[in-house]
Image 1 (spheres, rainbow, N blue to C red):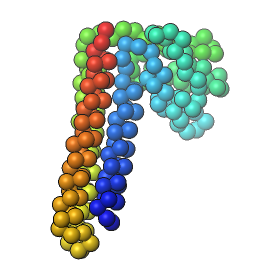
Image 2: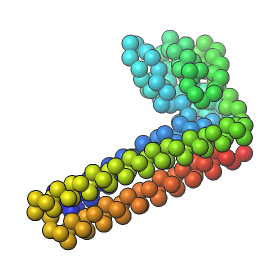
Image 3: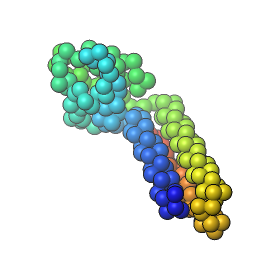
Image 4: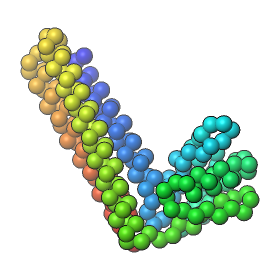
Length: 186
């Protein structure tokens, strides 16, 4: 594997870790209604589980209200149950066809907990990125030992991997900072 291939492979893995972080952050509640809050909830249906977004249309008719309209009305109870069992602290109300969720404003204590949760997610992703860096560096060492990379190319490859790690950790930190600011905003 060439130095460029190692860099591309490392970058792809770090990009994947960052994408996972962004998906996780979408699910963290802020004071506003957002379909991303519930769309990834797993619903038991038809003998399997599926994400809510595949089973219902999710809308925000107002800034503090979510509506969920299942494509199959028979799933209404399962969707309600999944929302109640989630750690989102939401109270769904059903009229037999539609589930309406009013998003209550967050207490200061809950905001701090969510900000801490966002920070923990960021740390998990950074650990994941460092593992990717470690694996890439091991690969570079192996290639160098087998004389597939020159000493100079191996050093440059390690430098590339380190730069990628710093860049992606910075992106993760920026995402966490934005989400924390969003959570703490009244």
